[in-house]
Amino acid sequence: VHEFRKKTWTRKRTEKIDRKPVQSFDSLFTNQSLFEEFRIYLASLFSDENLLFYREVSEFRNMDFSDVGLVIQKATRIFETYVTEQFNSCFQATLSKETVKNLEDIFKNHRHKIVN
Image 1 (cartoon, helix red, strand yellow):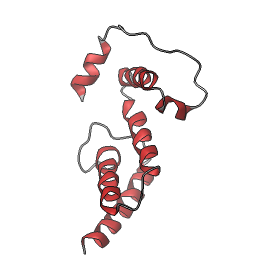
Image 2 (image 1 turned 180 degrees about the vertical axis):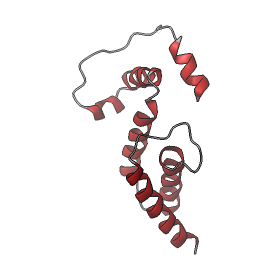
Image 3 (image 1 turned 60 degrees about the vertical axis):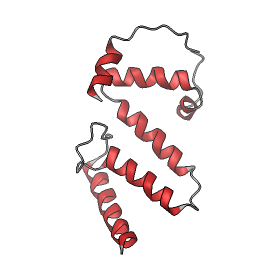
């Protein structure tokens, strides 16, 4: 992760980016080159984890919830990567301590129910 961020600082622009005005934040997710350019910019500020978190949560919300195993897998990945401090993730999103605690409690309670 840190190596990726280090490389993006010295990255040369070799491709043309479509720089049309963005109509909404969500439209970043439909234009891959624009998304990547914005992510690289955020990486230079050490803030790309917030964008990646937002994208994964958006994808999660649009999932087919009929496959419970896949839903649990995706939720666990988001939780472990972006929310909890327990796994020392380099991609922890900027969330309030209260929000993190609430999500940890919810995740712990639901995980306990699923396992038993």
